[in-house]
Image (tube, rainbow, N blue to C red; front, side, top):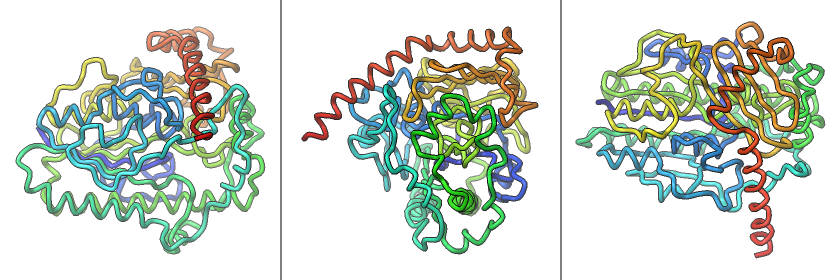
Length: 451
């Protein structure tokens, strides 16, 4: 039985780190954590959008089970239990800092302590409708969100300072095992930096290697997303600025991880405390002309995942696909607590390093695309099953940038992955349920706005 700490950033594409092979962006504290533990090279989010992904992590349930499809928070189910509640009921002291943005008010979700929490105000995102596709009028103005602001990191620093103070002053007084969750907003857009971080990576003000002329950029769902966010209006100057700012945001997050590691060491917790770094989803950063998340392409749906401490092998890299459900299961493993059998996921510590048969699933029913989509990753293969557009099949080991769709060339492999998808859910039935649910949300939204 051990304590556990999980630090969750927001919108961190793992490929923007030295641990995952970025050519010049250095993340020494991710490297430091990796040297102590295990890097999961193929980690995924349950859905590439904040609230659905975080809600799935909280509850061990799939997004379609929760019906938490988007960032609109009207009429979300409120009967699911959180990991904080289930752990605390078994004598684990659960402490939560920062952003929640989940299916219910975090005050009702059973954590032992809450600090500096931030929730999405009702009604949340109102631009989620897909039939017809909602367009965010003026969304192109988002592309101006980069550059220098001296208070750029104040909110995250407030959370991190408080969490480290808790770890230093409160944790030593506890007489039972504890779990500490720390949520930081960076590197989520907008890409504001303090001057010091802005100056770190001027070479990051480059252009994406793969743009709108690639076949994957011209898939109907990719075109939907660019239309929804007015992304084709972004200027070269804005693209370069956003990419530079993102590098600074990642460097800031890495420094906060370093502060956490220092505190763990100073308090003598390294041998008794599990520490995991991860994120809620990735960031496209202009690849295929796409920005932010909402896509099941790798840059959007992949997340960093590094674990160290009791139960984690040291200096190991795991190629087996994993996801945030597995991360959550690891908290129970560390505590020696019983996890509900119906929850998805298995502890990271128990996952074989190179299991080519393990399946990871993600789904997207949120804003910016005409209909639902599902991802299955199994071994070197990845299927994206679209409800209203051609499916795609990629071989990730030889085509990590998803440039070459092999769906027509490997029908047997596509059928194998489709069967894996259907073992999890009926994509057609869940897609229609999502549309019906969102239609009801739209009706309620009309009344909400009138009030």
